[in-house]
Image (cartoon, rainbow, N blue to C red; front, side, top):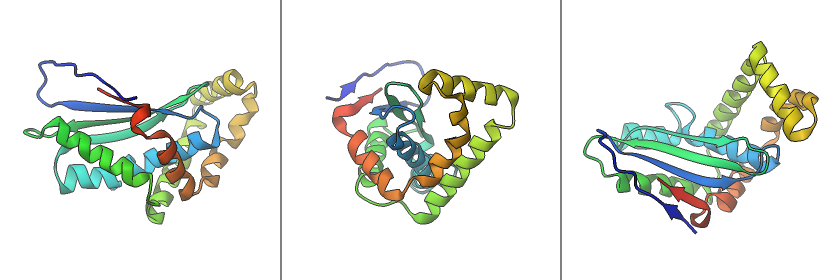
Length: 180
């Protein structure tokens, strides 16, 4: 079931972290979850940023990412409330967006923007020696195949919007959730 913790501190604006178990890195569902995170919060024109920061003005910022771990990943959402906004209001808005992601196909234009951003990030990491070394090391450690780096970008090209909905429905559930 859900785990919940409140850490009080002397901060100006409350922040909420919502984490979920996710598939292991390298599984197709991991790439679907990663694409979903990019669709939801990748850039200032993304659905969550538009809704929570611009339209409703209940968040200062919002982001999502999927961590690439060998045995199981982590889908993490982070948002900072605007002054005067209760963190519970922000949490409900985030969870509503995740519930919608589990039942509704993302907008095709948003999928294409996210895919392009993921490809750009992947190719950019291959242009720097330290990025290439990290990827080779990661693929050698996780898959015993450093050459698998060559196929990394192609994983994002194959993911379909239906797979993002399936990933949200399977992994972004209350019984897999931690809220801080």
